Length: 443
Figure 1 (cartoon, rainbow, N blue to C red):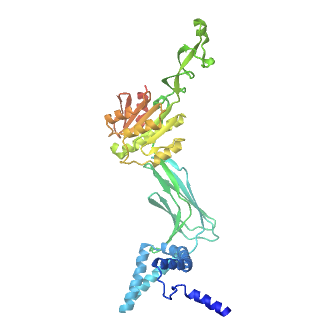
Figure 2: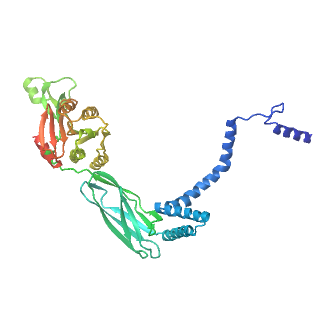
Figure 3: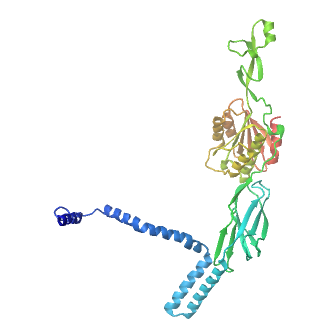
């Protein structure tokens, strides 16, 4: 019985790929593919993972040290050796051997382990255009032996600064100072500091990174707007409106008492004289809220300097509002900007880029009226190519009762003031003239 059972099992196993008639079954190509993939996952995947890890740990770092000239010399060595072997050219073999010797000498230059403690320190990570950013690099030899001279590279934006390290004894510290010129508004990535070992022919080049990169913000240039020169609303009680209220600060008139009125607002002297209850009526006030609409449409500016002037003007207005603890909203075609602190505002202004496919100043004014409906004063900072008709359309989008200014930025233009309906238009040619223009505008 046991032999028969075993024979039956064997028959079932062997009959798997066959029909009951004994004819073989044709497997579908998709099934074969799935089986091949499954086998590959079982046997090939572990080998591939180990090979990838080994390549990333050993081969890739070694290949990264070979410069373009190094690859040329290595390729020349292989080609010359092959030519010498095929055609029997001893000169080619000698030249190939010489190339190999040069590569071996280059390897001797980059071998060894560097033991440094490197510190990158920027005195200030936020400076204004025109101010020099000062920093230092301190390098300490943390090994127990003397290290040979080396070089340090410091990427600064698109450029790279080179610092030479002298021969340093154990525990010795070497410090270098550097200055970064800031001629344009930008966010400059400083670092990471890396040490470089290379042979005299620059065939091989080994780099080690020692610090993290640091962002240097070059803020737009701003000017001080003090007191009434800023054109802000100075009354701390807020700007009065034509809407009447039964409880506010700005007194308007007296009216008859209506059930439900607050008895604290009853004017008793008038009540005693007239014989009927009279209550105070007030004009509704709102807190001073300044809104700045900065156009980033480069088609509206004559030159790039005009766009930079507009950013500086908007930043100056925003800084003054924040300094006076005013409510502030700054809007561009790209959306609102952070106005919680002066640093946040200037950081956003530094990252701001112009586009020529954004909406016009008229579209921006309409967006501003919807986004900041409670604004009490509005500044439209635009370029010189914005026409008076466009400014009139933009002013029509400002809600009634809101004081509106337009600052047209045109580098080198003479400071001027004009009115288009209820809109005060200021022509700004120099940032230093902004304070004088605003003083005249609110006079």
